[in-house]
Image 1 (cartoon, rainbow, N blue to C red):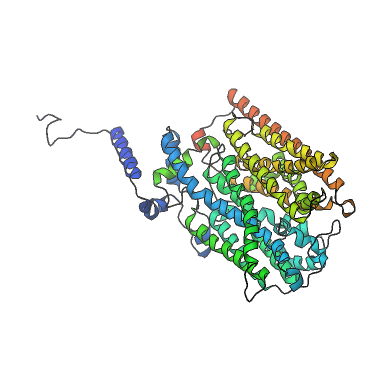
Image 2 (cartoon, rainbow, N blue to C red; image 1 turned 30 degrees about the vertical axis):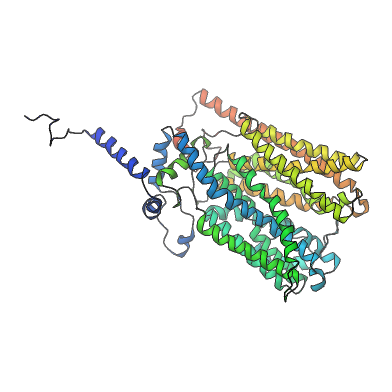
Length: 577
């Protein structure tokens, strides 16, 4: 009898050995898989089959059962940290510049009407003063045009316009909040139905086109309607950026990455001035303000095409990563317990969202954070000018203000990364405290240097909001519930920006004492809301830990995170505090 080790003979493998060998061969294949192969084969296998019909082609593709099963298997192993870091650097280069440039255009777009005013739009369109400059507290048409570039344009939505919101606007009816309430939730739910990056890109393309169309405006009504429609497209921006960040990064990484792209708003403001200065020197057949709309609108639309083509839909539907890399991208987030993806609307999660106190606290957070923003974005320069500066000096005083914002955001994301778990809400309260001090200095200090320093300190609140956005993305489980929670935050943002300007009275110029005190109180209340959120998170975690310790619940943490479970239904879910 020949030896089993003799040439030409092979040992007989049992079923267990065969399975292990097959698994090893599969791992070797995926590790050497080229990117093109990922697109052509595994990329298809990792998502569900396309739905029949025209609409099915455009709907978001959920991960395939095979991909979910492979992630669950990988969750049971320890990932190579060096390989994870390499993949995360690849994600950073792919996602962060794209979001930052988008956010830059988002803010450049907001400045176009301001620079158009310098270049003669008021004269050419025969705009009256009350059709451009807001005059609180009366809700004139001027409030709309003053607010539209900042945030109010996001509040009047496309289908509300179809229902005669345009008529309401022209007749000076207060349909503002109705429009926002009608759209904030649907746009978040649409982001659940369609590929997120493509939905965002489509909206950016539309607001670029609508911006170019504003160059053809012949009167106030045409300009207002176009600004309203542009605002409907822009309403998607902030929540989409937050959700994209949450899709690709762990809960610990999200504040840092949100901070990175949020910094681009300062760049956008600076570039808006640079573009405005350069465009103002164009000597062409058209008035300068028309070039402002055409050039910036064209740049927005052009960038949206790049975003549509090159930024991936999701970690499991992309040709930029091998299959093993895609599995690792998802698996590295297993501790988040919030990595399952689906486009299906869950009525139970919607009901749960409205029953959850966090939803209402998120609304209050957005509201209290933006009452001061709504006031200072309209009256901040007037307050600074009231310190005794001329127009040019007032403009120059905004430069240190921008640096303060950048410094506080960078400090916040650095400290959040270095501090141990359980300090994020405390850090939010700490970064918000200087704004309370700042408004107090504006209100009660007598000297110009002290009041100016107080004004600069109010910029610290931007760091608070960056950290707050990461709480929404990280502390709500279930895609439907998260969409509603996100809508709640930005409903609060809109409401705060609406209310803020009404608290500044012309009769109190240039100090605007009532408005400054209202901002101080709102910032103080924001700290209270933050601490209430912390209490809810801590109590929720303790309740879950107690249930596990007493043996009342059992779960497999490697698998629960792959399901579309709300934070209430997932016993493995723990809140960031």
